[in-house]
Length: 342
Image (tube, rainbow, N blue to C red; front, side, top):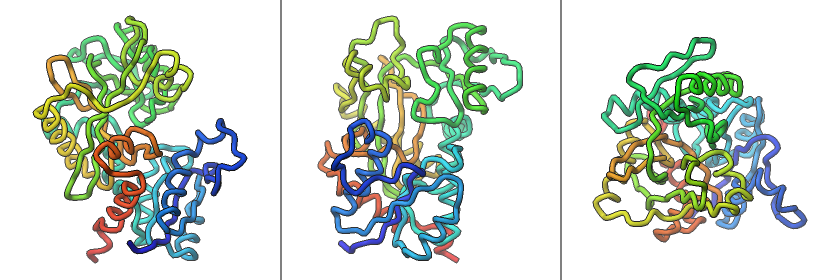
Protein backbone atom coordinates (compact mmCIF):
# COMPACT_ATOMS: atom_id res chain seq x y z
CA UNK A 1 0.00 0.00 0.00
CA UNK A 2 1.49 3.30 -1.08
CA UNK A 3 1.68 6.08 1.48
CA UNK A 4 -0.33 9.17 0.60
CA UNK A 5 -0.39 12.84 1.47
CA UNK A 6 -3.98 13.45 2.61
CA UNK A 7 -5.52 16.90 3.04
CA UNK A 8 -8.47 16.57 5.44
CA UNK A 9 -11.07 19.34 5.10
CA UNK A 10 -12.97 19.96 8.33
CA UNK A 11 -15.10 22.77 9.66
CA UNK A 12 -13.20 25.67 11.19
CA UNK A 13 -12.85 24.98 14.91
CA UNK A 14 -13.07 21.21 14.40
CA UNK A 15 -9.41 20.54 13.62
CA UNK A 16 -8.70 17.60 15.92
CA UNK A 17 -5.63 17.35 18.18
CA UNK A 18 -3.05 14.69 17.41
CA UNK A 19 -3.62 13.07 20.80
CA UNK A 20 -6.49 12.84 23.28
CA UNK A 21 -4.14 13.26 26.21
CA UNK A 22 -5.57 15.87 28.56
CA UNK A 23 -8.77 16.33 26.54
CA UNK A 24 -12.04 16.21 28.50
CA UNK A 25 -14.73 13.81 27.28
CA UNK A 26 -17.25 16.60 26.67
CA UNK A 27 -14.83 18.30 24.27
CA UNK A 28 -14.47 15.26 22.01
CA UNK A 29 -17.98 15.06 20.55
CA UNK A 30 -17.57 18.15 18.36
CA UNK A 31 -14.66 16.65 16.39
CA UNK A 32 -14.71 12.91 17.14
CA UNK A 33 -15.25 11.90 13.49
CA UNK A 34 -12.41 14.18 12.38
CA UNK A 35 -10.10 12.75 15.04
CA UNK A 36 -10.99 9.14 14.23
CA UNK A 37 -10.33 9.66 10.51
CA UNK A 38 -7.07 11.58 10.90
CA UNK A 39 -5.66 9.28 13.60
CA UNK A 40 -6.56 6.13 11.63
CA UNK A 41 -5.07 7.46 8.40
CA UNK A 42 -1.84 8.31 10.22
CA UNK A 43 -1.86 4.82 11.70
CA UNK A 44 -2.00 3.48 8.13
CA UNK A 45 1.18 5.42 7.38
CA UNK A 46 -0.36 8.33 5.47
CA UNK A 47 0.71 11.92 6.04
CA UNK A 48 -2.37 13.91 7.07
CA UNK A 49 -2.91 17.66 7.11
CA UNK A 50 -6.26 18.70 8.66
CA UNK A 51 -7.46 22.09 7.45
CA UNK A 52 -10.27 24.09 9.06
CA UNK A 53 -12.52 25.86 6.55
CA UNK A 54 -15.49 28.19 7.02
CA UNK A 55 -16.05 30.80 4.32
CA UNK A 56 -12.82 31.11 2.35
CA UNK A 57 -11.49 28.84 -0.41
CA UNK A 58 -8.04 30.46 -0.43
CA UNK A 59 -6.61 28.19 2.33
CA UNK A 60 -7.66 25.15 0.29
CA UNK A 61 -5.87 26.47 -2.77
CA UNK A 62 -2.77 27.25 -0.70
CA UNK A 63 -2.75 23.80 0.90
CA UNK A 64 -3.07 22.08 -2.48
CA UNK A 65 -0.20 24.17 -3.83
CA UNK A 66 2.11 23.79 -0.83
CA UNK A 67 1.21 20.38 0.65
CA UNK A 68 0.56 18.81 -2.77
CA UNK A 69 -1.88 16.18 -1.47
CA UNK A 70 -2.54 13.00 -3.39
CA UNK A 71 -6.16 13.23 -2.25
CA UNK A 72 -8.44 15.40 -0.13
CA UNK A 73 -10.54 13.69 2.53
CA UNK A 74 -13.88 15.52 2.57
CA UNK A 75 -15.15 15.91 6.13
CA UNK A 76 -16.63 19.36 5.52
CA UNK A 77 -20.45 19.35 5.66
CA UNK A 78 -21.10 23.03 4.91
CA UNK A 79 -19.51 26.26 3.70
CA UNK A 80 -20.23 29.69 5.16
CA UNK A 81 -22.72 27.92 7.43
CA UNK A 82 -24.82 26.74 4.48
CA UNK A 83 -25.25 22.96 4.35
CA UNK A 84 -26.02 22.83 0.63
CA UNK A 85 -22.71 24.48 -0.27
CA UNK A 86 -20.64 21.36 0.36
CA UNK A 87 -21.15 20.44 -3.30
CA UNK A 88 -19.53 23.76 -4.28
CA UNK A 89 -16.38 22.88 -2.32
CA UNK A 90 -16.18 19.54 -4.13
CA UNK A 91 -16.75 21.37 -7.43
CA UNK A 92 -13.82 23.61 -6.55
CA UNK A 93 -11.63 20.57 -5.89
CA UNK A 94 -12.57 19.24 -9.33
CA UNK A 95 -11.68 22.59 -10.88
CA UNK A 96 -8.32 22.30 -9.13
CA UNK A 97 -7.98 18.77 -10.58
CA UNK A 98 -7.74 17.39 -7.06
CA UNK A 99 -8.85 13.87 -6.12
CA UNK A 100 -11.24 13.70 -3.17
CA UNK A 101 -13.18 11.20 -1.08
CA UNK A 102 -16.92 10.82 -0.99
CA UNK A 103 -19.66 11.93 -3.32
CA UNK A 104 -19.29 13.93 -6.53
CA UNK A 105 -20.88 17.42 -6.83
CA UNK A 106 -23.97 16.34 -8.78
CA UNK A 107 -24.76 13.50 -6.38
CA UNK A 108 -24.31 15.84 -3.41
CA UNK A 109 -26.59 18.46 -4.93
CA UNK A 110 -29.35 15.99 -5.81
CA UNK A 111 -29.29 14.03 -2.56
CA UNK A 112 -29.03 17.06 -0.26
CA UNK A 113 -32.27 18.56 -1.56
CA UNK A 114 -34.96 16.23 -0.20
CA UNK A 115 -37.65 17.51 -2.56
CA UNK A 116 -35.49 17.28 -5.67
CA UNK A 117 -34.22 13.81 -4.77
CA UNK A 118 -37.77 12.56 -4.16
CA UNK A 119 -38.82 13.83 -7.59
CA UNK A 120 -35.95 11.90 -9.17
CA UNK A 121 -36.80 8.77 -7.19
CA UNK A 122 -40.47 9.04 -8.15
CA UNK A 123 -39.51 9.29 -11.83
CA UNK A 124 -37.56 6.04 -11.44
CA UNK A 125 -40.55 4.42 -9.68
CA UNK A 126 -38.60 4.02 -6.47
CA UNK A 127 -41.03 3.94 -3.51
CA UNK A 128 -40.86 7.09 -1.41
CA UNK A 129 -43.57 8.77 0.70
CA UNK A 130 -45.88 11.28 -0.97
CA UNK A 131 -44.85 14.83 -0.16
CA UNK A 132 -45.42 18.54 -0.68
CA UNK A 133 -42.99 21.46 -0.45
CA UNK A 134 -43.91 24.74 1.25
CA UNK A 135 -41.77 27.76 0.25
CA UNK A 136 -41.10 30.61 2.65
CA UNK A 137 -43.67 33.42 2.50
CA UNK A 138 -46.52 31.43 0.97
CA UNK A 139 -49.79 30.28 2.51
CA UNK A 140 -49.70 26.65 3.58
CA UNK A 141 -52.22 24.68 1.57
CA UNK A 142 -52.17 20.92 1.88
CA UNK A 143 -52.69 19.03 -1.40
CA UNK A 144 -55.65 16.65 -1.31
CA UNK A 145 -53.36 13.72 -2.08
CA UNK A 146 -51.67 14.13 1.33
CA UNK A 147 -53.49 12.63 4.29
CA UNK A 148 -52.52 12.84 7.93
CA UNK A 149 -50.35 12.12 9.79
CA UNK A 150 -47.57 14.05 8.05
CA UNK A 151 -43.89 14.40 8.89
CA UNK A 152 -42.65 18.01 8.54
CA UNK A 153 -38.96 18.85 8.23
CA UNK A 154 -36.45 21.03 6.42
CA UNK A 155 -35.83 20.42 2.73
CA UNK A 156 -32.05 20.71 3.10
CA UNK A 157 -30.97 20.34 6.75
CA UNK A 158 -29.75 16.96 7.96
CA UNK A 159 -28.65 15.24 11.18
CA UNK A 160 -32.26 15.51 12.49
CA UNK A 161 -31.96 19.30 12.61
CA UNK A 162 -35.31 20.77 13.66
CA UNK A 163 -36.92 17.35 14.12
CA UNK A 164 -38.90 16.62 17.29
CA UNK A 165 -42.13 14.90 18.25
CA UNK A 166 -43.92 18.07 17.07
CA UNK A 167 -42.71 17.24 13.55
CA UNK A 168 -45.56 14.71 13.26
CA UNK A 169 -48.76 16.68 12.59
CA UNK A 170 -52.37 15.50 12.49
CA UNK A 171 -54.36 18.47 11.19
CA UNK A 172 -54.04 21.53 8.98
CA UNK A 173 -53.52 23.94 11.85
CA UNK A 174 -50.54 22.08 13.31
CA UNK A 175 -49.22 21.57 9.77
CA UNK A 176 -49.18 25.34 9.20
CA UNK A 177 -47.60 25.94 12.59
CA UNK A 178 -44.82 23.39 12.02
CA UNK A 179 -44.10 24.67 8.51
CA UNK A 180 -43.76 28.18 9.94
CA UNK A 181 -41.39 26.84 12.61
CA UNK A 182 -39.15 25.27 9.95
CA UNK A 183 -39.23 28.49 7.90
CA UNK A 184 -38.17 30.55 10.91
CA UNK A 185 -35.52 28.08 12.06
CA UNK A 186 -33.88 27.46 8.66
CA UNK A 187 -35.02 30.39 6.48
CA UNK A 188 -35.68 27.78 3.79
CA UNK A 189 -38.44 25.55 2.46
CA UNK A 190 -40.26 22.94 4.51
CA UNK A 191 -41.31 19.53 3.25
CA UNK A 192 -44.25 17.51 4.56
CA UNK A 193 -44.27 13.84 3.68
CA UNK A 194 -46.63 11.02 4.47
CA UNK A 195 -45.62 9.54 7.81
CA UNK A 196 -44.79 5.84 7.39
CA UNK A 197 -45.28 3.72 10.47
CA UNK A 198 -42.61 1.05 10.59
CA UNK A 199 -39.04 0.08 11.38
CA UNK A 200 -36.27 2.68 10.95
CA UNK A 201 -33.62 1.06 8.75
CA UNK A 202 -30.21 2.41 7.64
CA UNK A 203 -28.14 0.87 4.87
CA UNK A 204 -24.57 1.83 3.95
CA UNK A 205 -23.62 1.82 0.26
CA UNK A 206 -20.06 2.14 -1.00
CA UNK A 207 -18.59 2.29 -4.49
CA UNK A 208 -18.42 4.27 -7.71
CA UNK A 209 -19.66 1.97 -10.47
CA UNK A 210 -19.43 -1.40 -8.68
CA UNK A 211 -21.54 -1.03 -5.55
CA UNK A 212 -21.57 -2.88 -2.26
CA UNK A 213 -24.18 -2.57 0.48
CA UNK A 214 -23.51 -3.26 4.13
CA UNK A 215 -25.97 -5.16 6.35
CA UNK A 216 -29.11 -3.24 7.26
CA UNK A 217 -28.85 -1.41 10.58
CA UNK A 218 -31.88 -0.56 12.69
CA UNK A 219 -32.82 2.12 15.18
CA UNK A 220 -34.22 0.47 18.32
CA UNK A 221 -36.38 3.01 20.13
CA UNK A 222 -36.17 1.07 23.37
CA UNK A 223 -38.72 1.91 26.04
CA UNK A 224 -40.06 5.16 24.62
CA UNK A 225 -43.65 5.76 25.78
CA UNK A 226 -46.27 4.18 23.52
CA UNK A 227 -47.77 7.56 22.57
CA UNK A 228 -44.40 8.82 21.26
CA UNK A 229 -43.80 8.51 17.50
CA UNK A 230 -40.86 6.27 16.59
CA UNK A 231 -38.82 8.84 14.66
CA UNK A 232 -35.16 9.87 14.82
CA UNK A 233 -35.55 13.22 16.55
CA UNK A 234 -32.48 15.25 17.47
CA UNK A 235 -32.81 13.98 21.05
CA UNK A 236 -33.01 10.36 19.90
CA UNK A 237 -29.91 10.76 17.71
CA UNK A 238 -27.66 12.97 19.80
CA UNK A 239 -28.76 13.19 23.45
CA UNK A 240 -26.72 10.53 25.28
CA UNK A 241 -28.70 10.91 28.50
CA UNK A 242 -32.01 10.55 26.64
CA UNK A 243 -30.72 7.44 24.85
CA UNK A 244 -29.60 5.91 28.14
CA UNK A 245 -32.89 6.74 29.89
CA UNK A 246 -35.02 4.93 27.29
CA UNK A 247 -32.54 2.30 26.08
CA UNK A 248 -32.33 3.69 22.54
CA UNK A 249 -29.71 1.89 20.43
CA UNK A 250 -28.82 0.98 16.87
CA UNK A 251 -27.82 -2.52 15.82
CA UNK A 252 -27.95 -5.00 12.96
CA UNK A 253 -31.54 -5.38 11.78
CA UNK A 254 -32.93 -8.66 13.05
CA UNK A 255 -35.42 -11.12 11.56
CA UNK A 256 -34.82 -10.09 7.94
CA UNK A 257 -35.00 -13.10 5.65
CA UNK A 258 -32.63 -13.48 2.69
CA UNK A 259 -35.25 -12.26 0.22
CA UNK A 260 -35.90 -9.08 2.22
CA UNK A 261 -32.18 -8.40 2.57
CA UNK A 262 -31.67 -8.76 -1.18
CA UNK A 263 -34.66 -6.55 -1.91
CA UNK A 264 -33.34 -3.82 0.40
CA UNK A 265 -29.85 -4.07 -1.09
CA UNK A 266 -31.08 -3.79 -4.68
CA UNK A 267 -33.34 -0.87 -3.82
CA UNK A 268 -30.51 1.05 -2.14
CA UNK A 269 -28.26 0.53 -5.16
CA UNK A 270 -31.05 1.82 -7.44
CA UNK A 271 -31.34 4.97 -5.32
CA UNK A 272 -27.56 5.47 -5.36
CA UNK A 273 -27.43 5.22 -9.15
CA UNK A 274 -30.59 7.27 -9.75
CA UNK A 275 -29.08 10.18 -7.81
CA UNK A 276 -25.68 9.84 -9.49
CA UNK A 277 -23.85 9.23 -6.22
CA UNK A 278 -20.28 8.03 -5.74
CA UNK A 279 -17.90 7.24 -2.89
CA UNK A 280 -20.17 6.21 -0.04
CA UNK A 281 -23.65 6.95 1.31
CA UNK A 282 -26.28 5.89 3.81
CA UNK A 283 -29.88 5.19 2.82
CA UNK A 284 -32.64 5.84 5.37
CA UNK A 285 -35.61 3.54 4.92
CA UNK A 286 -38.92 2.65 6.56
CA UNK A 287 -39.97 -1.00 6.58
CA UNK A 288 -43.66 -1.55 7.27
CA UNK A 289 -45.20 -4.53 9.03
CA UNK A 290 -46.43 -5.81 5.65
CA UNK A 291 -42.88 -5.74 4.24
CA UNK A 292 -43.18 -2.60 2.10
CA UNK A 293 -39.99 -0.51 1.87
CA UNK A 294 -40.08 3.27 1.57
CA UNK A 295 -36.98 5.37 0.85
CA UNK A 296 -36.95 8.34 3.22
CA UNK A 297 -33.58 9.94 2.42
CA UNK A 298 -30.26 9.33 0.68
CA UNK A 299 -27.35 10.74 2.68
CA UNK A 300 -24.10 11.37 0.84
CA UNK A 301 -20.91 11.37 2.94
CA UNK A 302 -22.61 10.17 6.16
CA UNK A 303 -20.95 10.15 9.56
CA UNK A 304 -18.05 7.70 9.46
CA UNK A 305 -16.65 8.09 12.94
CA UNK A 306 -15.55 4.90 14.65
CA UNK A 307 -18.43 3.07 16.33
CA UNK A 308 -21.20 4.80 14.38
CA UNK A 309 -23.75 2.97 12.21
CA UNK A 310 -21.86 3.10 8.91
CA UNK A 311 -18.55 1.82 10.26
CA UNK A 312 -20.25 -0.66 12.59
CA UNK A 313 -22.22 -2.24 9.74
CA UNK A 314 -19.02 -2.48 7.67
CA UNK A 315 -17.21 -4.12 10.56
CA UNK A 316 -20.04 -6.66 10.91
CA UNK A 317 -18.97 -8.13 7.56
CA UNK A 318 -15.27 -8.12 8.35
CA UNK A 319 -14.27 -4.66 7.10
CA UNK A 320 -12.26 -3.06 9.88
CA UNK A 321 -12.31 0.69 10.40
CA UNK A 322 -8.85 1.23 8.92
CA UNK A 323 -9.74 -0.98 5.94
CA UNK A 324 -12.95 1.03 5.45
CA UNK A 325 -11.09 4.35 5.36
CA UNK A 326 -8.48 2.92 2.99
CA UNK A 327 -11.27 1.72 0.70
CA UNK A 328 -12.81 5.21 0.75
CA UNK A 329 -9.42 6.67 -0.19
CA UNK A 330 -9.05 4.18 -3.04
CA UNK A 331 -12.50 5.00 -4.39
CA UNK A 332 -11.62 8.69 -4.38
CA UNK A 333 -8.37 8.06 -6.22
CA UNK A 334 -10.15 5.91 -8.81
CA UNK A 335 -13.16 8.16 -9.40
CA UNK A 336 -13.14 9.41 -12.99
CA UNK A 337 -13.92 13.12 -12.78
CA UNK A 338 -14.67 15.02 -15.97
CA UNK A 339 -11.28 16.79 -16.01
CA UNK A 340 -9.52 13.44 -16.35
CA UNK A 341 -11.04 12.92 -19.82
CA UNK A 342 -10.10 16.30 -21.27
